[in-house]
Image (cartoon, rainbow, N blue to C red):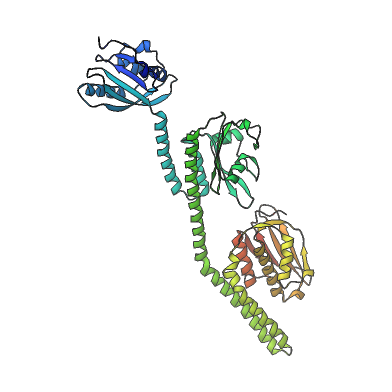
Length: 482
């Protein structure tokens, strides 16, 4: 009589955990509404039936079902209440995880099984464990693009965020450039856009420096693309480096748990990018230190060559009748050469903040700083480029001084032509024409301190300086706009 099917008390019926009472004959005596809802079964079909029928309805694996039976028998033999974990399928065919706590009822063979759904908790724990693995990968990565790719694909694979992308700041152009995206994002948009200041929610979130969750984009102003099919978004700044954005075609697709997990992911990405920046800075510093000896050797060679040339000129002047004025000029030149050594050894290699600079304006200032005759400077075609203004002026002044030195002063040069070069190898040039109307082939050589200064400044900008017949060219100026 005690094992007959019975209805659960009202308090059991009201609780959210599932409750199953199993009699001594392993038949189900009662189930509450939570069990019906969770497993998609009708209590009339399982109450009075064997426990196996209920387990079969939930598609519980035979190994886990056997473990449950052993735990029930152990409890009936006087064992303590125990817990086991079961995986089952709910009424909609989704896999769920439940913690089953078994308790003996009234000292008899009947057992109550209280089932608590811990699927979300287990998923959260799994994602956190996976994020630890992602963090280890981020720690090992040293390239910013690789770091961004790891972050965006972690969001896609682990957090089920198939439409995601990462943008990093391009300091030269002052905008957010896409560097990584999931396949879903590229398929949907045909490539990720770049964002200039004030363009869209992505830039707004980056500028605000705070993670933004938008439940329904149709209720939000300031969209970059008002026709977008996306309905909800999370946009998370990665410190001062850029942003990670993920979107969904469903409104209110993200909750606070998604927000917290994405915040953890971008914080790990920020730390990795900070470290990559520091490592890059250390590598650059090590490279500068390693090349210091070579640079100083170049300076010494250039200085020696120029000083020898000046001393030879002094000797020749002393041998002549009008040597005194020439000797004074040559001594002044030697003093200038010695003073310029510091520029090559240190200051010339520092760039500083870059700005958009007009080549013509920089040249005008450079002429004033050099010994060139302004009337003999010809700008053939101008343009603008991003550079450290003071360093660019020093480069141009050094090139002009070098031309004058090789030509024996302004009187040996009819004109100095300056212009830009477009195409795959953008850049600019300085060419000197001799008084005979042809190109002064002896104007520049591979030696000389002025040219060493100019080359050091070009290298610091990432450009390439080369010397040709009567012409100095600077190439690789990607930001040049003729």
